[in-house]
Image (cartoon, rainbow, N blue to C red):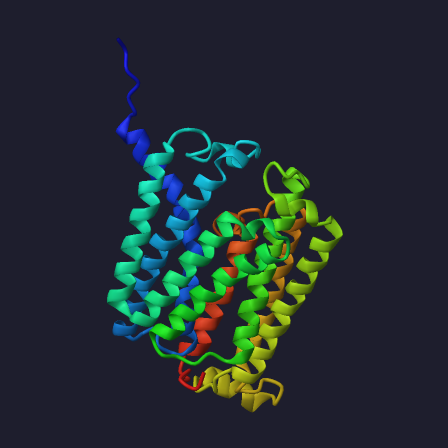
Length: 318
């Protein structure tokens, strides 16, 4: 009598895919406070935030697995999600449940060993995502707000870890870009599957024009709040090249250097917005790794920010 056996290597790859490691790029937001408060070169602070990044990788993977368990029937009706490990049958529901619980428990225990406040934020993130998977994702507008809140929790977890203050302009920027990414995700999903309730109930409540307006509104808010942040919070320059430019022309003022990044920011938002309307932004984390113009703009932006903040001036006043 022949019995069905599961290839352990195939199952291992399926479990890795189920954890969605490509989505861990979202958790890099936890380093934001470290970068913008001038602590990136502090080995102790960097190590603390790095381990917190690892914790969020486990926590977020736990929520992805749980969501895939809950959504397995709907995912089978989706042209892309039907290939996910649980929806395709590659990973049994019982094993996936054990996997999600294990990842969640490890992340909670690990986070508590790092910081009690941090563990509270991680637990809040887990509970919020569970509520999202079970019910809140079916409520239009609320589902976008919940997705966006995940980005905000990540960034402010990093701030709590190092006891850092972030400007209100930076907070507005974080909220705006989070809402931009979340609404763009919904807009792209609507472009792929339409308003079918077989894949997501909330989609039937989103007219295309409404999501278009959300994407436009939050895209504008994102670059504008970043521009205000750079205007009010740029560090004073001390490198000779900046001082020389300031001597040559008053236009090149030495305490607004971060404003150099505004054109790159606008380009990145414009590029991402074009991808949204092409229906290619349902998974923004993949675009950040695959779309060459978008990846290039992010690299240039990051290089400019780090160069300005750590090229001589102190960022401690942030």
